[in-house]
Structure formats: C-alpha cells, structure tokens
Image 1 (cartoon, each protein chain N blue to C red):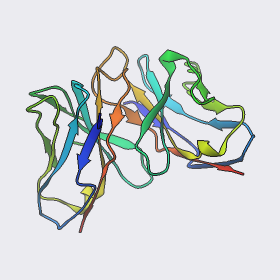
Image 2 (cartoon, each protein chain N blue to C red):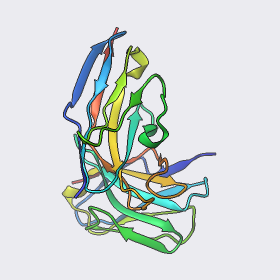
Image 3 (cartoon, chains in turn blue, red):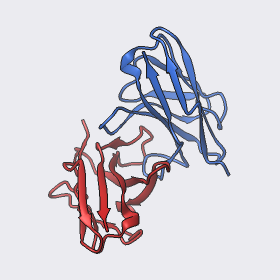
Image 4 (cartoon, rainbow over the protein chains, first blue to last red):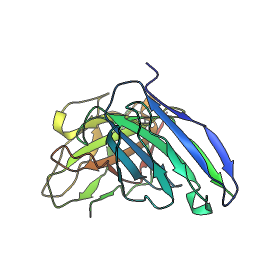
Length: 113
Length: 111
C-alpha cells in the first residue's frame, strides 16, 4: 500500500497562475482532508470530503476549490495564485470521522512569487 | 471556536531525562484529542489519542478536562524521540470537519 500520495513535491508559481495539487489514497477511506501549514504554524483545514461527490469548506477555503469524483482522489485547485498561498499543503485520509486516525501524505511545498 | 495551544516552540532535554510537552485546548463540547508526530524526513503520523488511553513508545497523555489540558509525557527520553510534536483537537460525535492543530513543539533530545 502506498497510503496517501501527493504530487508534486515542490512547485513554484507566479502570481495569477493556477495549478492543481493531486492527492490519492489506496486505503478505501471515505474521508479526505486538505490542510495547509504556514511556517511556524499549525495545520489549518482548507477543505474536506466525506465521500465521492461530497465536499465542504474548512477553516481557510478562500482561493481554493476541490472536487471528489472518486473515493481515491481528492485534488485541490488553486485559482489565481497569490503570495499568501505560499505554504506546505498536506492531504490526509481517514476511515471515518474526526475520532479516527488520519493518514497524511508527504506534503507539497508551494511558493508563489 | 476551538483552539489548541502548545506554549513551547522548542524543548531540549537530555537523554534519560523526563519529558513533558504541554497542550491546552479550548472547546465548548467534549473533545477528541490526539498527539501527532513528525520525525525528520517522515510524514506526520498519529502517536496516540486520548480515547485509547494507551502508551505508545513510552509516551502517555492524560486528558484533564478541568484544566483543559492534554500534556504528553515520557519518563525517560531517548534520542529517537527527537521530532516535531503536534497536539490536535477534533469535535466529539464523530464529525468529519477535520482537526484543529497546535503550532507544534520541536523536541530535541541531547545525548
């Protein structure tokens, strides 16, 4: 099992560009999450999903979009990148709700200049 | 709003000494609390959760609702314990709206 995979590992974007961060899991988990972590800060929830076709906003959703067409994949879309979106992005999945262990991907380090 | 506070950004102790990483939370309901750890060049992973009341790698954590704390303790630190430790809070009732994380404590165990 690969667990949770994320691509790319690193990316540099220019202001105004768009990109999609990919996340996939092979554990058949229904619940998936996107977090961002700014330097010296804790992880903050961007979006989450409880199953294919169902997504909802987290604490910091502005500037992002998500979709969940399959159980395995949960891509995060950045439209019109801004310097404030420079961060490390983590995808996670869990078998069920918050009380269950979350399995994290390795992260994507994004710089917007 | 829920909040998690880890007051120590950095904690350095000698091998064999006791370790205590502090975590305080703010939440009006009954919390689900976790400690996650990130070792160097590894991904974030669960260390332990309050509901299981178990000891993992010699670490324990007790939920104190009166003091709204969930401190992580180990009686004798080992060099392999060096890592970033994050306290995290989830809503009770099995909700799916993710975890609220503290800023983390960088634990360094000196030989």
